[in-house]
Length: 531
Image (cartoon, rainbow, N blue to C red; front, side):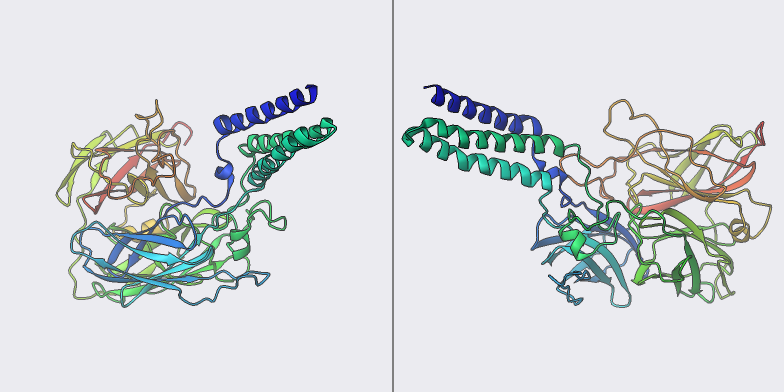
């Protein structure tokens, strides 16, 4: 009887442990590197400004949902999608052929909005999606995650499997063996198996994920399909050099379109840079400022390793300033300038009519203008060098702005600038050229009224002295708000600390009704006490 009681207690302990795992720990699959996420990539493909969304692949073989968001003025037409696996295994277990394995077509309509197609993925690993419009092809690298079982998850499953197998063994021995004490041996093994499972499940929530291929590691077939292999690096390489940018081609004359070719070069080796990761919904953000101060925010297409291209027509002759914001894997955010920009010769075009510019500073803290039929009011706190300045743009009186590039608003600034008729030359030589974001509301309680800004600048650009909110992705694996959600604004706040007194050029950008609005602002920043 004592033996039977001991076995009963062992079974009770096993049952309690299993109950604790089921109600207190949850699935260990959250620690797996196979969860994946949606990828949103803005592309200036020919004359079209598109946002291409790659929905996460939950299993392979399985579908990849590709959604294309068009904007106002986008021509109808057909896009071809071609998916090609690019990863090759070091052990040659599953070599990728490097040839297209799936194709689809997206038919774009006249109405701006979302259009979609499905491409079938037949394996995990690094891929390239070629998006063509019949003239140009954008090549977007992405990773299809594998369904990987983490080491703690294996222990959880293995422990419960061992306990399940030993349970009938212990019962049979206790009933039929002459010495029922032998039943304690499999019972003890059963308890040990459950203990291992519970311990692994409890520890799994605190164990870090391995470096993620594509985001932290150069993706290969090996580190995607087996991220927990012992020969994988434990940390990313955070010492990659900065990027050099060269510019060639472009529009030769005003209003005559041309292709601007951009080459990215590793500053240490001279090799092409082909390890950019998607940052703020683009592989590269290209900022162009024309002679009269008109800003264009474009997203060049990747046409090859280290090679990008953007098709554009310059509206006016003269010098154009150019900078690019990008993230190199292991190198962080970089904002780099082309050394000289590019020059456009005079053509038959008339001079560009820039939008009405808002002037602030020198006692004026509020001004209004009309941009593409939209009433805009810009307000600012007293702009003083060395102190945080809050700039708020109000677009009408309704909360109907759409997130563009994952943000409610963008603020691009350059300065201090001299009184020069050619604004592009002044911007090209300015000590500060920055790019910041107004992130919008969050679901976190107590933070809904606080503005936030994420600043990326160069040279003497200072980080924003602010705190606040951001567009948070929903829980339970749902997708974050995209451009189809028009529920933000009308106020779009930014906070920035201008380090030097002087005159700055600012451009505020938002999206409404699938149209990107750009508000030019001239801001005079007074000298501070320590200037």
